[in-house]
Image (cartoon, rainbow, N blue to C red; front, side, top):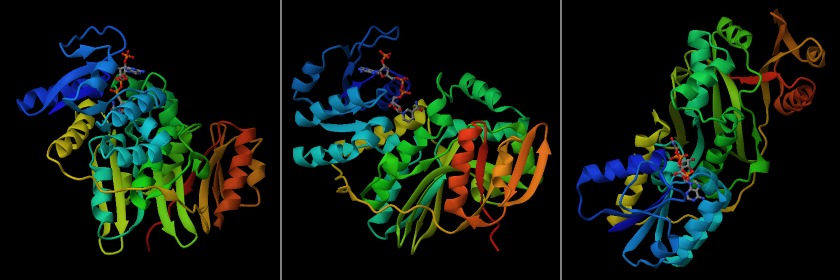
Length: 389
Ligand SMILES: NC(=O)c1ccc[n+]([C@@H]2O[C@H](COP(=O)([O-])OP(=O)(O)OC[C@H]3O[C@@H](n4cnc5c(N)ncnc54)[C@H](OP(=O)(O)O)[C@@H]3O)[C@@H](O)[C@H]2O)c1
């Protein structure tokens, strides 16, 4: 079967290496769409997308470019031309998820996107397989290797947040503009895709809260250590009677918690179903070879004629996290008094005021934190996960 690749970046080049290593005459990368000359040339390179669309021998378009809208146009045209689509592009899938699924169904082609969440970990694939037998009750995990690397090395090596970013960039984990990772927006996209896959529901970006690592200081990290806690940036989806709870936020985990053990740039996804209990998948959530591996797995399933599990996104009832919670808040002297009614413990370290709240209604605490952040943009807050009894 002939495929066309869109883009010639990290993932696309790794995919080409993996395809070429297979020496499989039944799978041929017949075209690579580029938009400007590239120093690493390949005989299959072309600027002509219309020719790709018109070639009846090309049955799969593999989209590996950055950004949502150009990619959506390419994928839409490919499916309209009767070709199946495989993508690694979470920005595009999260922005056009429902439309992509509907179009694939209408055109009777396959749309596969396993690489768009957690790179090399077969995350969406596992969710789809498990939910066929047993409804998914909850999913949570660490789905951004860059921020996990930064947190881990702030803890282990005493790096500051900005030093952690520079080190992650040097190792190729963080992009030149790391804001989507740091502010949690990369995780928001993956949460929307995971929610669709797990609950067959449409989760919109304005339906859930996202908090990243902005404002985190070494004094905060030292305060967590003193309390035998470890901070991880978690994505959480939970089915409740009131609806689906969805959020991205830093959580202070007990040292013994499995997700507190996740080091460096690893990802970890935890799935819960009634009969299975918990299942945890740990591995490389990004990088060329792991992501290309997920893309190739999708391609080979199409080549083998494996059917894709039908999925249609419905409106989904969303519920805010309810119940009581405790938070850590690192802030300044001017903003700290806002928390006087809810503070259980207060410490000071090098100009940072460190507040550990008492158990309070989590919505009220979050509203207070949101207000306080307007006064102190360097405020860092994290929910505290209690030790299991
Ligand atoms: N890298 C990872 O670890 C990873 C993991 C999971 C998912 N992903 C996703 O996979 C996709 C590719 O990632 P990557 O790391 O390979 O990105 P990359 O190295 O930045 O490469 C992106 C490629 O897309 C091309 N491109 C961008 N816009 C285009 C357009 N409008 N038309 C044609 N080509 C266009 C770029 O061409 P120019 O050279 O001309 O700019 C470049 O070849 C992204 O959507 C990313 O979010 C990546």
